[in-house]
Length: 440
Image (cartoon, rainbow, N blue to C red; front, top):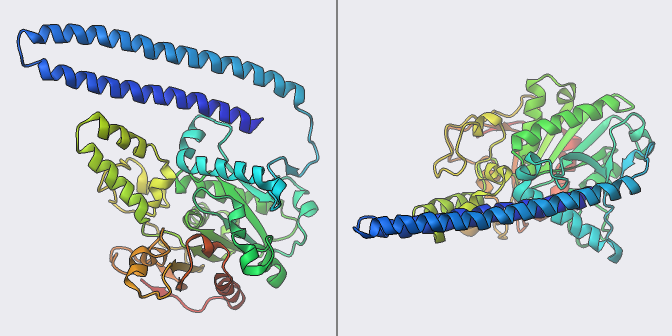
């Protein structure tokens, strides 16, 4: 019902926004048509009169569309509220709250598509969904077997197989879900259910927790949410948490950094127990595709015509989370009071250094077999360049201290989330501990 209500709201919001966009475009064309005759007398008066009549008629049409759209929405709201009242029943005592359980068999295809479609929508317009309280907003939750893990006393004891004080929290990337940690599992391990979390659990006795969240919101906002979520998890854990490990893929690495910084800044107990942070394919210095979108929008707006301004409006409507990726922003101070669509928005910088006494492992990849191949250095894993994934040189104003930087060859961006070679590095470094830091 929540998804259905959210989809309904989205459709009607989309009609409203498209109407607004068409109306703005219509007025731009109309105004520029009148301007052609404005300098020519006696056509000026006639042109202005025609424009007034035209604008009044157009406004009447657009106003009618909005009234009808809102009326139909209100009628559907009433109907859905009635259905929900009739079908809602108590779920007291269920620690795993209802959500879409995704399976690898044919029967699980439709839920899988729903989950990933919702996540993709959150990636594109997640801040829009959140600001309007839309039911499709994913928020942020811990998941187990595709269902929401309720953070209530007793929930963990009932549903987690072991509880030995060591946990690993997995944070997925833009437009993904926690199921992305199992990508190509059958190819790599011969079992669709195997991922880094399941292997850490069986090999090292570390309990995995998977996060699903709205990737369209600012990285800093998701960092604060994650910090609070982990704090709540720690409060209800049945034993003392001795060690916490954060593993983030792509955007998830930036969210992990943001959450840990927030936790340390505000003295949250869980932050003192973090020993390792793994960032897999995370754009610490920015992602090139997002920068290309920003340049494209700027160039389109350089030509004053409806044919270029409309595409620019559409491009600029992308989410705050996507815009953060273009610059690797993790803190509120980096984007507050800034125009994210400015071409040279990337200043001033307020990047926070990595938290001291925590092991950071920065892992990237190239799609080429040779990490030194010019195309590999230029394109990286096709989404994140090696220099950005490992805080490489060339950014002298940025200084990060981290434990290890590693570039793999012949691995795509998504496969970093479940590749055996990457897991070997994670397992080895968790087992061995800090090996010494390097300065970039």
